[in-house]
Length: 343
Ligand SMILES: NC(=O)c1ccc[n+]([C@@H]2O[C@H](COP(=O)([O-])OP(=O)(O)OC[C@H]3O[C@@H](n4cnc5c(N)ncnc54)[C@H](OP(=O)(O)O)[C@@H]3O)[C@@H](O)[C@H]2O)c1
Image 1 (cartoon, rainbow, N blue to C red):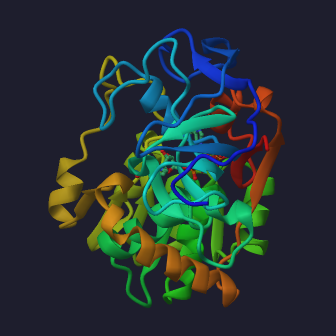
Image 2: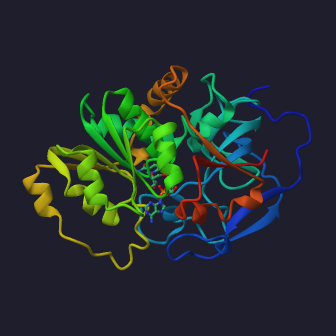
Image 3: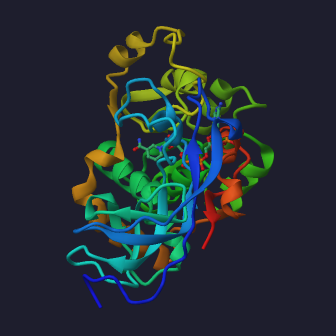
């Protein structure tokens, strides 16, 4: 019955992954502790959700950091902030009912008592459940909105994408291809280069660890790069900036290659490249675009149904896999969206 706590007894333990020390750089498994507490009671206006898939995301590094960011740091001793796909098991929140599947900020834990403000998306599309943590999770939606709203691709553009075989990057490449772009992927090993070609339909794919990036991008984009979707920052970005076409656009979506922001890293000065090539360089944070989430989810679901976009899940089993999951992403060990199945 909606808006009331159902009359069955709930489990009495809630496993949580707590942030117990503040990482300096990339969070390692040792920064977290697995603990057990009681299952929280939802207050008035809240619901109790049971997590099914926990998400591991590069952004969690920023959330765990004490450095100024776009989000307040996760408190030491608190459950790690994380996205998850969950089912409502009891509701005192208007408009939410037991059995609703939701995607939102429910943390690395079995259960969370949350209000509607924690929910990013309600799983209404007819899709596999894991799609709500990938295709229409922040990865797919970031790819869609950052590319279409900031990158504004037009047919015939050469689109270069870093972390090309990863979750966001693979969607960007496929959406760009569906819009008529020539797509070039940058990724970190030969197996991922092959996946870029065979699975995600890139026209060209480059191993940034073994190839001369400047020469390879020049070969792949002899007339210059019209649109660069960057998820790495650092030397990869510095190199691609010097291969941009006049009037090119750069979407800054991630900075995965930068080990630490303190002290501020130094590198080549690129302002002359921006000026002479008349580049537009835009920063994207998904949480500024929540009003467009449902529309983007519907578009992504449609692209998937039409076979224009595929997605891969890199699935780990059990909450014990969570503490090491962020470091593993930064080691490039994931093939597809890293989800942890716990329910
Ligand atoms: N701005 C936003 O709102 C927003 C939202 C979601 C995600 N993002 C960003 O999008 C990017 C991709 O996220 P995702 O969730 O899809 O993760 P992902 O690409 O599935 O996994 C992260 C990938 O980063 C690459 N990487 C790690 N360390 C690197 C390094 N030192 N140099 C170059 N590449 C490195 C690895 O790919 P390779 O093996 O190919 O190197 C790794 O597989 C991240 O930067 C993330 O912060 C931004």
